[in-house]
Amino acid sequence: GAAAASVAPTARDGLEGPRGDGGAEEACVCRMGSLLLDIHDFEKATETALALEERLPLGPDRLALMRSRLALTKRRSQASSPLLKSAHIEPSRNDANTALEEQINLQESRWDLSQRGLSAFGDILTQGGAQACVTSMYYYLPLVLLWQDGEEDKSALCSVADAPSQSLLREAKRLGTRGLHDLADLLCGRHGLVPKALRHRLINQWLRHPALRPATCPEGLDRVEEACLQQLAVHMSDSGSAPYFRAGASVEAKEAMLQGNAAPAAASHIFRQAPVELLCLERVACVATPRHRRMCRDVPKEAREDVISRCRFLLQMVFTKETSVSYDAKCRALSVLFRIASPHEISAAYRFPVEDLIGIWKHYFYMDIFERLGVPQDFKRFYECSKAGLARSLWRQHQADSQKVQAVAALCLDFSVNDSRFWASILQSLQGHRLHDFLRDVLVALHEGLIADLPHDPGLSAALAGLITEPAAALKAWACAGAASQPPCTA
Image (cartoon, rainbow, N blue to C red; front, side, top):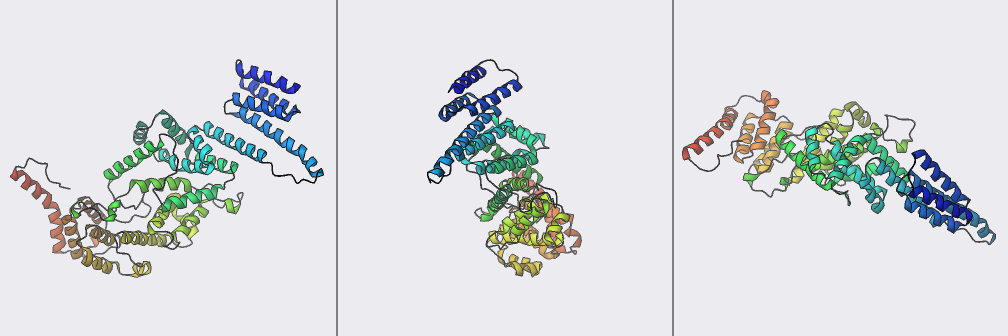
């Protein structure tokens, strides 16, 4: 009791009076902690410790007092244990100690977040636990990492964020991918989670469901995410989209127009990149970044996250049966694989030439397209068949469908179908369906490669000439008519 009486006035004077230098304050708190352990009255010591904690902000001082309180409760448990044994009573698990340890871990984690400028995730940690907190960090923080080198894009993001969100984004940039992983490892280790298992779970979930979002979001970051999606949409609209498969490209995503709800005149470019999926790939590539050096011997094999083990995890997903992992998820997994590893590293994990894997990826890409368009194929048969024959068969059956015509054109580009007369029909059909954006991308791709292998054909020459003369003819007709409306689309 006397010791308790001596501690309280000292603490009160120190907390309410002028603050001295940091070393003196730390020594004061250490002395209070040691004095608390000298108090024989447990209730009085605990009451004093709680009173002191309430007056201190979250930080090392408060955490030190909490650890002193934990030491008091453990001492009391150890003192009562022999008495219980002498009375032939089995000591029960001390729930008070466990609860206090969890509380200390929680406050230590909140302090770690605060020290890194990420206090906004502290409420998620408190309400949802460490797994929800780490998931939210991996979901939202790569948003700013995506634009580390683009000042114009970063300013666009910051323009929609309030002051706290802007501060959080600046801290996320300073933290970087490695710092984010280090913080996630720290939180997981403190709260009984396995970092590698959690990261693999997130990779698996987001590759399968790219639009899946965490249940909770730090205030303001939902607007930042929306700005990211809009910025990506503008960027992709300006840069265009390749009308065919591209190994290692940002994404081979298709828009919702694959559902076929639009009229043919307004048909969409089915291979245009979807911002949600592109952002998902950036996020997963951040999570999947290897944590250790290749074949790192100082890390247990089950915890190792070097580039080879990460490649094998993604390849396992790639070669899982399509009944469990869809073809679009397999394509996303391959896209991430080629982002985080070099061809040599991929070949070492795959144990076959990387060119074979790219070929499989290309076939997965079209398996997904065919499934979405309602013309599913058997993978083995598709892999072994003549692509020119398949393209002609699809053309005969579906040339009136604008989306299937796009798929046929892309198939002919990717698998080098060099039938000039067939290409003339495809180009005329794309023009007839008014698929101007897609047609432009097809023409660019043709002139970059396949056009040199196409034999001369009068029909193809006429089709190409028509593509050049029709816009001028449409403008001339519009001008002669003296129409007051906007000029026709000349794309």
